[in-house]
Amino acid sequence: MDFSVDFQSLRPVNYDVISVATRLNWLDYWGAIKVRWGFGRDHYTVTPGLYKVGKPNKDSDVFVSANYKLSFDTLRKNLDSISAWILVLDTKGINVWCAAGKGTFGTDNLVKSIKKTSLENIVKHRRIIVPQLGAVGIAAHKVKEQSGFRVIFGPTMAKDIKEFVQIAYKATPAMRRMTFPIQERLKLIPVDFMYGKYKLLTVMAILFFLSGLDRTGLIFSKMLGTSSFPLLNVFGAYFSGIVITPLLLPWIPFRAFALKGAICGGIFSLFVDSIWHIPLIESTAIGFINLSIASFVAMNFTGSSTYTSLSGVKKELKRAIPFQIAFAAVGLILFIISKLLI
Image (tube, rainbow, N blue to C red; front, top):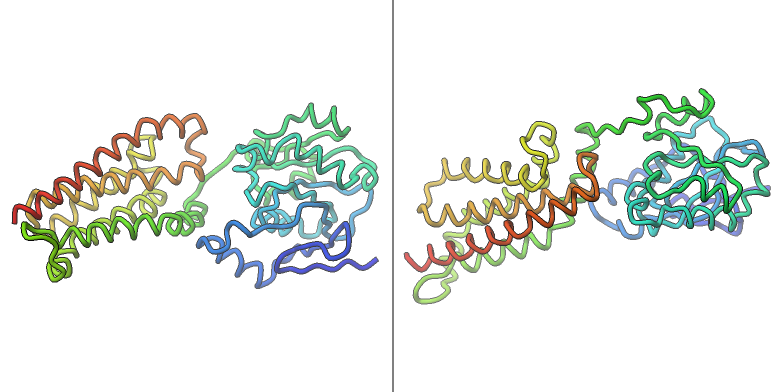
């Protein structure tokens, strides 16, 4: 029987099982580039269901994936030369790790997908291979009880799948270890950078108008003449928290992302102040705002990082946000005062 596939959307075409290639094409790469910059992120999905690579049979392995297309593509390209089944869960377009934390890559969803695809009629063995990063959402004993399938947790990285299968589904210590090298952190920066762009533009617009403030009101010509310093600082603080902090993550002191971002934002402020001679009260005001912005946006990275846990993130947010709000408020008040004193 022939199987067809629309490689742009990977939607099933009149068949219950679709054959997909392990080699990505230019549309896949272009889609990955766009989604990493935040374009179409909420709709970059694969239809949940059963797929196949190569020519699998009843003895072939079944790998489980989220329906976020980047997750699906990462899995299938690492199944090159392997004939296997891919069971895609409906995780609402969220990757395996995040979906496991949210509960969509979970026990109930997995059992439901097994039954919906009649997997027991497709393979004669009773094992499924689940990504290690999805373990937090999967109760293996409950899956066994409710579906009859035994869960095998695969390696952390998809690139280790072939070796994992070759050594009888045994993960070495290295396969269980999650690393977060600079190249992986680089991949996450664009979407975080674009995520807060409207907030950044809003803050810059506010400071632009406030730059024209004096005792007589708002003067447009003054906005144009004096807004460069605050606008450059705000963008620099945003850049420090979103880009510099993740890149230098292992080497910045302190564990909390809020403090790491504040350090980068503070260093940037001191650097700008050293080359741009601005009245003390205005530079102090912008410094407070910088610290608030850099600290806040750096915390966005907590959900993408292996450096913290869910409980740690909640604790950090609870402690840091009041300080960030206070710093921003003090900075804005001082900035307004600095304009009224001129």
